[in-house]
Length: 115
Image (cartoon, rainbow, N blue to C red; front, side):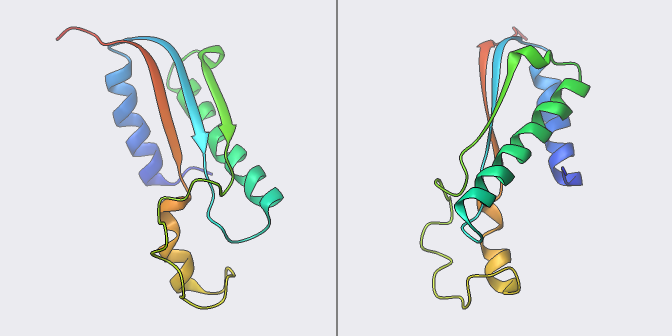
């Protein structure tokens, strides 16, 4: 489910995190506003779980990683994608505009390694 760009970004982040003492990692999944709330909630949870699984494959303890979904409740596009036509997946202009809303944010707690 992770795109190549997402894996590359996680690889980059993992290099930095492996030099630190990690207490916890929270992966918070998000979705765009297209589709039902239930579908978007599930999709955001799946996104967060995919990031958790990938981080575990990169050597992080899965017990230290919490994955949760926030559905479409926290868009980053604001009103920038309003008025672009029908609110459906066939409207490619809208789908492209809402891409930033489909994301996973990481919150990491721990101690930074000394250089």
